[in-house]
Image (cartoon, rainbow, N blue to C red; front, side, top):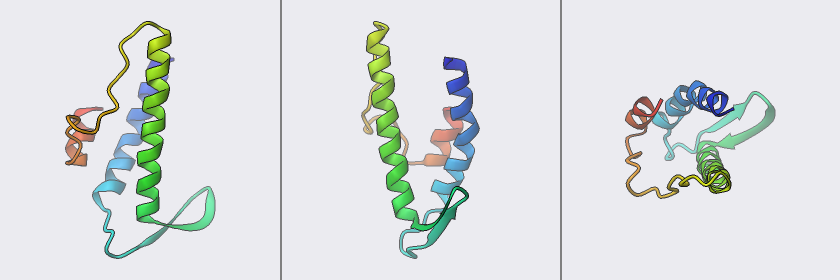
Length: 92
């Protein structure tokens, strides 16, 4: 349901915001995730998050059109997400 999707998104926002607020690309720090033994650079994880976000925006846009609804904008410009902590706190 839409409510479950919104709850899932809200549940993960603090973790993602915390991760993004502590990024330091000059270190080329490697991290691991619980489901994989491979180490990944923080930049690679950030790229994955961005691509995954775009993928989901596309999915939601298709579903909205199928339901004769206005699809959400996929534009970065105007979303005011440069200050990631404030973006996540405002959009919970």
